Structures are given as C-alpha cells and as structure tokens.
Length: 259
Ligand code: DGL
Image 1 (cartoon, protein in one colour):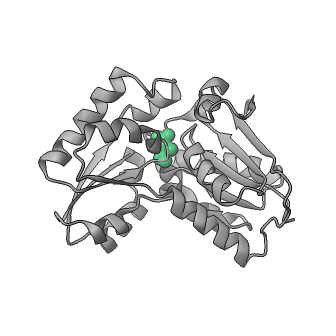
Image 2 (cartoon, helix red, strand yellow; image 1 turned 45 degrees about the vertical axis):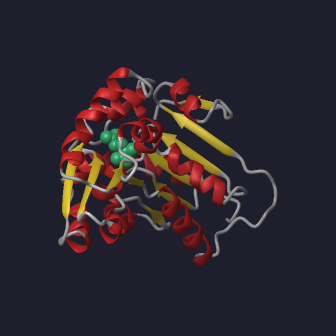
C-alpha cells in the first residue's frame, strides 16, 4: 500500500506548482499527475459541473491505485472536496487561498486576492474569509483569462502582462501589502508579478502548506513510502502535452490520454 502513488489533479497544468512542492518535500513518493486541460477553465463552470469533473478525475486516480489524492486546484477544492471526502474512502488534501496568514500579517489592513470566479463565489471561500478576514479589507479580483493564457502556452506574453496590471490596479490603489494567489496556475506568474508590484507587497500562495499537510496525513495514516528508491512520476494530460512538459522544464515524459 505505501508504495502506491499519490494522485494529484487539477483543471490543467497549474497543479504542477503543487506537485513540485510535494516532490521536493517527499522525493521518494511515487506520483500520478492528472491535468484535465480539455475541460479548463473550471473557474467559469457551476458547482455541479465542477463536482462531476472532480469525480471523473478522482475515479481515474483511484482506479490506478492511488493511496491519497491531492486536489491541486482551488476551484475544485472549494466546490467539490466535501463531496469527494463523503464519497470515497481514501484521504483527500485540498488547497484554499491563504487568506489567514495574509490577514494576520497585514499592516495596511488591506489584502488583495486573485482567484477564479468559481473559488471566490464558493461557500467554502466565504466561510474562510468570514472567519479570518472580517476585520480587514479584502480586494477580490477574478483572474479572467489567466488560466486560458497559461493553458495555451502564453505565460510569458504581453497579453498576460496587461491582464495582470489591470487586475492589480485597484488593489494597489487600495494600498494592499499582501497579495494572495488563489489559483494553482498563478505561482507561475510570480516573476511577472514581482516586476509589476511595489517591493512592499508580499505574495502568498499555499503550495508549501499543502505539501506539509500531505506529509502529515500520510504519516498519520501510516501511508508514507519509506523506500529510498527513486520515485516514479507519471504525468497525464487530455490537452497539449507540450505545455505541461514545458512547465516541468521538459524533465519528465508527458502522456496524452483521452479521459
Ligand atoms: N488551477 C485551478 C485553480 O486552482 C484553475 C481553475 C480553472 O481551471 O479555472 O483554481
């Protein structure tokens, strides 16, 4: 059981930002990464559709022997993780925008959050936000178009730069000092964001926390792979394998599969 892979899925290539954190912390764990790029973006779909796509991805990973599943997508987590946990027997790790650390550390009492429509309009997000950020100002912004550009291989483009400066404008006018990245595609934007943001604005994402939580849940369930062998990491997409491979610096083989 312990040598069985960790399953990781996202609406597309963005969850590789989470896979990297997990692989760094747990290099001997075998993994299967599933990119549902043919159905991206999830962020514009309704809850029902997001749950049904999450079920499809989960069943593929369970049928391929995964011992635990990381939902490496804020949109799928905030809309579907309760359903998945109530339906399947294995542990699930999710990812949510890191509002809590930003709310605790802000000095200007104002934080910005960039996420998909599906995440920002979810019940889980409003619950977390009400719990941790009710005393501060939160400038929310839907990152329309960002996932689409990344999925089509246009991460480093003028279009991306101008989208981002538009989304940041109202946040900077409101004097944010923390920017929360609420989508797993967005860590890939950090080099561009660093150029656009003044130096006093810090960027927060939840990737490392998800990797630590994955390790802790594996330990608690006695599921850690204790072998010292090199891990086997499988990457599967129903979209363009080249885009996924490029985010992995072309170090891994990517398989195309219709799922
Ligand atoms: N990576 C997904 C997330 O974290 C992107 C969602 C989408 O496909 O719109 O929300």
